[in-house]
Each structure stands twice: as structure tokens, then as C-alpha cells.
Image (cartoon, rainbow, N blue to C red):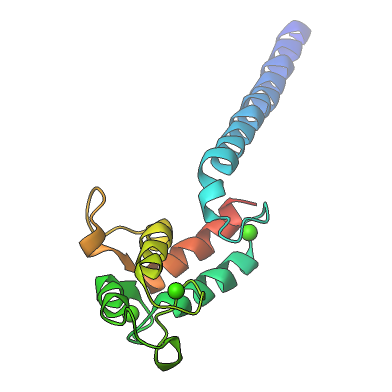
Length: 149
Ligand SMILES: [Ca+2]
Ligand SMILES: [Ca+2]
Ligand SMILES: [Ca+2]
């Protein structure tokens, strides 16, 4: 009888302790991998953290590239920059790299930067024509803040 009790207690102990031991490294591994391989791309201002400053950064970036003031960045904004090449930077928001001229380097800046913010893609694979950075991407980034900390 006494032996059975000891065995039962031992069995209960195993039940209580083993899942905690096995769950801990799994959880850590998940966090570790997410932090290293995925979280890096959400650190938009590249200060080593994914936090609210990246959301502010993204809002400023959308404002920098949004040419038609619809609060999103897509191919239409790219076309407006293209049309404004050679015009005075004082008359539009098209000097996106702020070098005092509207030229091909602004289009390059757009192509280099905007795809990085299109987290929620509307089409499979990369299609520059369908690029869209909007509220959905902003909300996606906001959700990453808790997951990457
Ligand atoms: Ca950051
Ligand atoms: Ca726009
Ligand atoms: Ca420029």
C-alpha cells in the first residue's frame, strides 16, 4: 500500500515537472528564432529594437512617399514622382531623397525602400505594379511589437 502511494506520488511529480522542462526550451527556441530571423525586418529605424518608434518611423515614411495624399503608397505615387522629374522640389513632395532635385534617384529611392514596408502582400511573389503600403501594413507592424519583445 505504502509503495503504491510512493509510486503514485512519483508519477504525479513526473506529470507536473516534465511538461515544464520540455516546454521551456521549446518556448525559448521559438522566441529566439523569431527574434533573429523575422524580427530584424520590422526594426525599420534600425536601432536594434522593434518598438513604437518603428511605428512612428513607418508613418513618417508613408508621408514621405505618399504623393497623392491618400495615406497609402502604391504605383500611383511612383508615377507622380516620375512625372515630376525636373520640376522644382518646392512645388511637390516628390524629392523623396531630399537632395534638392526631382530625378531618377528619387525613383530608385522609392523602389529600394517601399517594398520593405509591404508586409501584407496582395499578390504572391514580387510585383512592383501591385505594391501597396497602407493601414494594413501599419497594423501588421503594430502586432509584431509584442511578438518581437
Ligand atoms: Ca527599431
Ligand atoms: Ca498615395
Ligand atoms: Ca531627389
